[in-house]
Amino acid sequence: MGEKKLAVVAFGGNALLRAGQKGTIEEQEANVYETCQSLLELVQKDYNIVIGHGNGPQVGNILLQVNAGEKMYGIPEMPLDICGAYSQGLIGYIIEQQFMNVLKKNNLKKDIITLVTQVVVDKNDPAFQNPTKPIGPYYTEEEMEVLKSKNPKDSFAKDPKGKGWRKVVASPKPVEINNKETIERLAREGKIVVTVGGGGIPVYHVEPGKLQGIDAVIDKDLASSMLAIFINADEFYILTDVPRVCLNFHTPDEIQLSTVTISEAKKYLADGHFTEGSMAPKIRAAINFVENGGKTCIITEAGQLGNPEAGTRIVMG
Figure: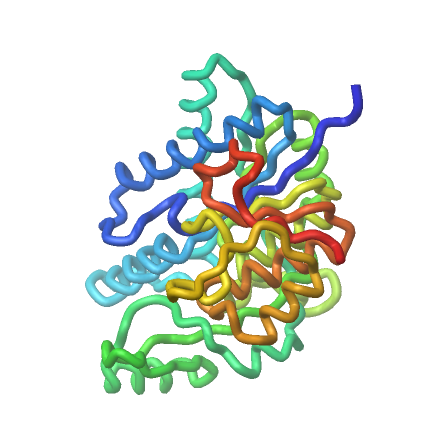
């Protein structure tokens, strides 16, 4: 028998929380259970699996909670990197539990392990000069001015829909993923590993050999893509809420794409077919994986994983 295939699967936001939901634990558990059921296809094909996931709504709620705790009870407010760590533990726990429930129901046995993952970024990344990623609660202009006087380095942006002001942070590129060798070893031993949650906790070298957290948000698809390269994954799956990538999305001229070469994907990106808040980061992550030794990246809905015809495949060419 040849070596088992190794797949990295990046859970999209709707794997955890769907539009219109409040975000109760019951809702999130049900969504994760359903997504993990879809991954059974890969388990039954004897793939080794590593799971990455987003954390946007969860870390947003944690930031609101710590902000309220500081206002009401004087509990010291925690920085973004610590809130990211909270969210990794919270979401990892839900995925571990619900995937275990799915496996037990299907008489399968595998260990599922969550790793709280630090991802190293470069403190000189140009993204730090242009923070654009909104996080946390909305503030009035007066509240924002008070916060800026306390922390002059913080940046804020006005919400285009008039909801107020929000803190904005950088979205730097991941450079290094801590414990990547251990992640690969555990996965190749047959453990399902949940890691790089929310793109990983952003850390940087204050000086050689000394790491520290930093206010930033790493794109989770790009971080999962980098991890897939580092651990020599055969396939990289990006799960989203559409069965295939489309050109002219939601128009009468919509075209679903089944196979796309790297050169075609780059042209579609340059032509503005994919929006920044949605498909563009996923296409970049796919290109990154395939250009750096990966065989295939598949972008699709979780429910389509068992369908060999489903999804959009990004391949070399």
